[in-house]
Length: 415
Ligand code: PLP
Image 1 (cartoon, helix red, strand yellow):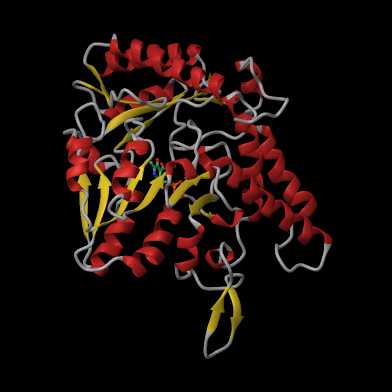
Image 2 (cartoon, rainbow, N blue to C red; image 1 turned 180 degrees about the vertical axis):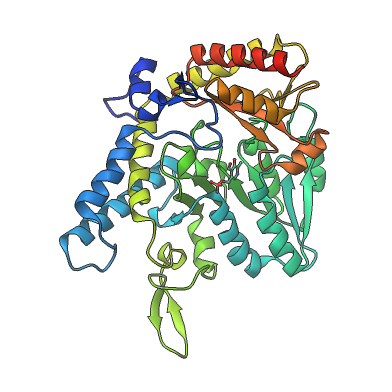
């Protein structure tokens, strides 16, 4: 928890909303935007927008090895974000933080480097039914190449991992457990504090997809004992195109590079090149400097809130919306885990989810419909898709009322 003296204990929602200029936007026939698509991407506070503007108007320069003022300032700011992320995740070393484009790139990086180096024929990769496609397909690519096998941890109808079944799947063949901390479609918070120690008994390497967790939970990679942890900036109020891969130092040091190019090398000759130290070994080419710098502003913004107040606010939104939605005839909530973040996927009997999305949009309510990049999960639940609302710290109970009224109106029109 941040001990900054400016910590906002009172959680003044109107003050918070004023930090996000986009929330004033009018859509379709002058309707005020009700943005409930935060699990896909969150909106950005002014401090993040200002950081981008300021970077390009006052200090734009390529980083590392620059012999001038702006290059040094940009390098310093870029590296300062790395330090902020280290603290955000409670990593042991700043060098364990690698900049990527997002979780997708982080997973591909580990699959193509650690995976290629460590996976052999017959090795098993364990993942869960509720994984996002980006935590399935990169492993399928490397598994196919190496002859490794993908095993799937089943879930119950509430959308929770079946821990007994999980335990049965673990064996010395389990080379990797790769799992989402929080499901983007169900909102389920997975019991990693139970799952990781069980896998560690078999020497299994652990990758945690933190895409949905990082904005809602306090992350402590040392306490979790995760070998890798990834999150995307755009889901924690930072810009798109910047993300983080955390890896334990001893593992990162042994991994081969991912992309080749400038910055990731120590010495280059036509005969042979040698590689830079971690983390630079994994950051080939000119990185996304501006967005990396703005990521610090986003994390500072998020960490300025009292964690308990933030959690209580988001849980109140989740509970109120759940309660009001359950009153709607024919509506079924997908994912009723005991431990859940503020995401609600749902279907309505006799109504197609995409039609609901279209009609809500006409009322200014932005939601997401489809399979949410979790086709295997939807198949397990016997669905081809669902509608999803997801809350951020700036959402209000009044917005839920607008959503519920719009939803009722839509259902009436569609039935
Ligand atoms: N994993 C989960 C659980 C997600 O929700 C997402 C994005 O929605 C991703 C991975 C992929 O993140 P990105 O598209 O930012 O790389």
